[in-house]
Image 1 (cartoon, rainbow, N blue to C red):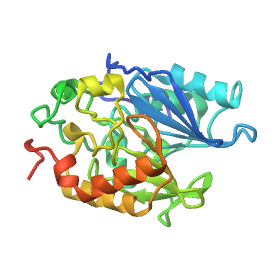
Image 2 (spheres, rainbow, N blue to C red):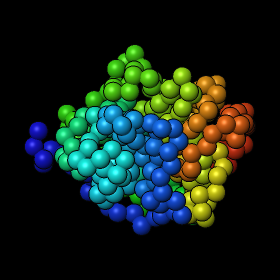
Image 3 (cartoon, helix red, strand yellow):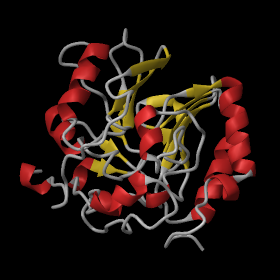
Image 4 (cartoon, helix red, strand yellow):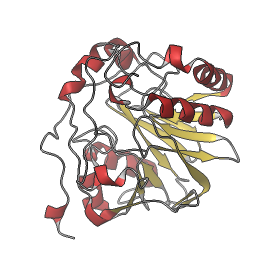
Length: 282
């Protein structure tokens, strides 16, 4: 594998978007650590004392240095994850993955339906700036959307639902936002890493993205192309009755606030999540 075989799309670029929580970290559990990169969360899963961990998602474009610094602060100098797990392949979840793969030389795992978007074979449908929503939705036309190419560095996780290097977690296919979106769930303490299957901030609103006002919401409207699948994915996750949830956008939420909010979202998905208009609304 040569370095030249790993590449981002030609539209890959730094996006000057931020929030009040950018740079902040939250220890959700002793082995579950959430860190915000501008407007998106990464998750470090593992006990700092044991020095074995997995990185879930890879942040915004040009954020590799920040992610490495957070990792070394949490796990020690020259530490590296055993693997990178991607909930999906949108630009704000794979923004630093190539630099991280080169620096750490670790494998990447993503659902088989997501692999074409991560190996240069297919591109996602264009984001919809016309969708009902706020200023972020309008800005989405300028977001990177071309596929990246990780070559043989990316592979699907085991089909039995197990997660490499995280034996207590299982992956759950939660499509809708993307075809191969996955969430990770740990049954023993009901910890959920939801990606963008649902989020805890209205991601289309520039004001709410900046202030990180907590609101259990559906997946980002401007990038979600299959609302029927997205609805079923939220219902699937609500049925798990998670105790803690780290989502791709917004602060971690737990307890009754999480369960009641997620139950309401599942029950009233069409009213709360599905936009009144947009090219992917049927």
